[in-house]
Image 1 (tube, rainbow, N blue to C red):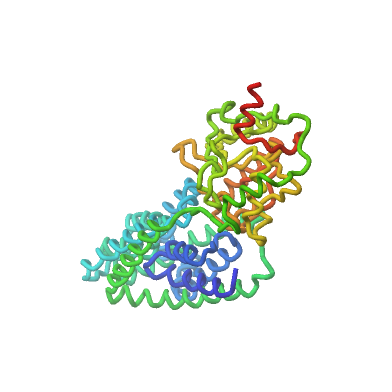
Image 2 (spheres, rainbow, N blue to C red; image 1 turned 90 degrees about the horizontal axis):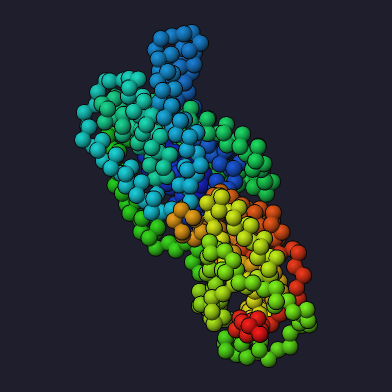
Length: 489
């Protein structure tokens, strides 16, 4: 993380945690624009949340002191207020614990969702305009629970926690200053609860890592969140008192519309392409006339099987049989996937295990004739050649022992949106890439783990490329049609 990213994210966290414009929604938007994800750095996330908690404590230090001292002295008013805070925290606590995994799936950079929820926030703020007359009514236990439900709704990115809770309290005819005070103090319970859970899970899963190179960004992020949080907290008190929430309604509406439009135009894992260094026809001519390395003499083609004939649940999306590939050119006549027989048996076992987890395999490529490998090499610029096999050495694909795969959801039959697209020549393709969402990393790691258990190893530059570790075949240069002709004899 760069220092300027930490500064921007810290300021956004501090301002939007208290201003009624959704901190989660704006962090999703910032992550989308900066192409970063603060949730990938758990320590940073914990730091900025601590900073916002401190800013609340600082602004409401007298109220918090009175509550704590009143509890110690068993004063009725303070005990009652603290009890209402606990009641208000129950909905978010229950929902957070019961639906933690489902909630995580909402934070995937879905701008359409964020934009839609910002419009919901806009409507909540707009309705307060019609409750101009202030009252002297304080929060009841029933009000506390309803306000707590509004806080639970704010788990969805785009719903402002402060906007939802304060608007709800005002619509319940609670005194405006009391509504703001209650809204800010009540958030301390879930903030510290979430912090404790994050720290616990971070320690258990070894994710709470302090990166020495990020020391300066950590400090900048903490201070920017703290200072902007104090400013926003005080500003919010004034805004509510003066009935100016409607201005934020217009702001959320505008940002919400922009978010929806951005989501509509954002293409997930858009096809990564390169411009071949030569014309495809020229490259094919070079490849077909080139002398391959020593070809296999043990008739390995006899041990190649067509995967789709063995397991119908494995889908085919053979990219090189279409123009939907990094060179935007068709290399195969037909969409077929051949694989070493032993490797295929292991692949089928892996597919069966993945299906128990709700996923099925998609094959992008299997056995590849040597001349196709030569074409890839000749057409790829030198600075990207580490993504393609050196034809002088031959590829594991040429041996029928490599498979390029993705996943689809069994529930809806749709491909899973992975961290990178297939054949994307960027660091996102690395199996150890720490970006993307937590869900995407978990799915990628599940695929790698299952394939490893079934005697496949993942290629260091491509999460989708797996080599069968017990391969006993040599390099082949037969086209698919030639395989059919040979095997029919």
